[in-house]
Length: 209
Image 1 (cartoon, one colour):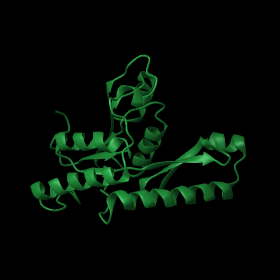
Image 2 (image 1 turned 120 degrees about the horizontal axis):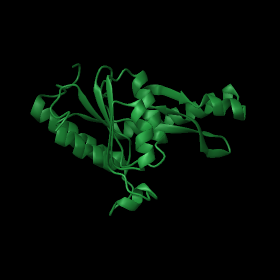
Image 3 (image 1 turned 45 degrees about the vertical axis):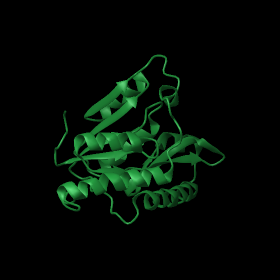
């Protein structure tokens, strides 16, 4: 299995739905698991319209063309960013507790979600990871829209989409159980993954590689 047992590999999950999938990937590869959170920056009054995103590490990716087109003032953009950054930090604390984030620079990062529809969050995560200095990025999902998979290929070193059904409809359509993963489940899986590694490899042996 490629990437298995390689010391520089890190599995990152897009919470919450990506965490149960990423847990299995990390176990199979004997790699550390962490979360990488992406928060959409929604246009005020039209929150579903993304004018950008922020990700773990405080990296911000903006849709400059859309911001210019809509004439979004800088102070409004700063307010939205500050609000989403607060929520991102709250989630990181809820999921990770006092454990520091895994270092990203120079590593092979396998970015996992439960599926890809439009791929907007995944694309924001990829761009943020590039800025954080990831050496290689692999996008891995169980199910995806075929065109979304293809559109991500130029941006990363590898894309693994286990199935790309036609017609795709929605990610949830391809799961027998698509209940929302809770914050508690996310934290429990992260704790399990890292406790297991602590016993196998010595506590925090994967830090500072």
